[in-house]
Length: 372
Image (tube, rainbow, N blue to C red):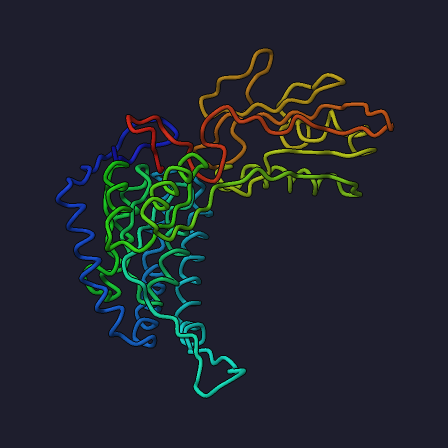
């Protein structure tokens, strides 16, 4: 179900009807019909449309940012920054499209003739986008492909239907022809049919490994081009420092920026040698969250829950950030003695909810596939 749900309360504010099979087919029909625009328009003409689209993101910054906050709960300042970044992306491709898409001459080493690389649109592309960066993830996919003249069918995450509708509206206002960018509230089963449609030339997904595997399998079966971004698990490593306060600030930001919902967020913390021995037990808790109880000599545990449910033996601290949707997370700094005498903090971040990576983990479906 596509719905706007307040992440701080779990209350559903608005629902959007899932597309019918007829509506999904119509979306692909429209995108396919618009490929004539991609083939017949000039790069300069498409660049002009991208510049307008970037300008419209700036003009509607407040509406877009508030929609993002309402749907996925990141701080307003970060949502505004995301929209600014989107405007920069559209402007960047508007400025450089002609350079990027210019014919490239190749040296002919033998025989007569001329060789050239020419970059042309391939047709309809399907985008499957996540909820953690509702506007940015679309911009980074849509901008270069619209510059090239490809047309887009966009399936956004079920958590972001309002932002998805706003983005489609801006594309229309910018002057893109009907079908050049089509938003569709499709189901997973319907998306499988879209990937299989011979008019669709490729698919780009940002999501979980399981979602990527499901999409890649269908795309491979039908010999479709596929691009996958499947999250990450990045470490935050402290080798040495003479400014522990700055390290603490950087560590908290690395884990909780964008309410912690980023594929490149620090999910494992490693403190090496003297830093682990001297500061391991006080590294994050007393400095970053002074309301936490003092840890014991071996373990420092930070528990922070949007539901305010503490882990056994601990009291959850008051919310120190303005994000609405910070999930339960544990930062466990454990000092472990190695045979070479090096002390390390390990047992990194242990998220206990599905919202720990760059995009949401798949939900169970009857077909075993989920791409949100």
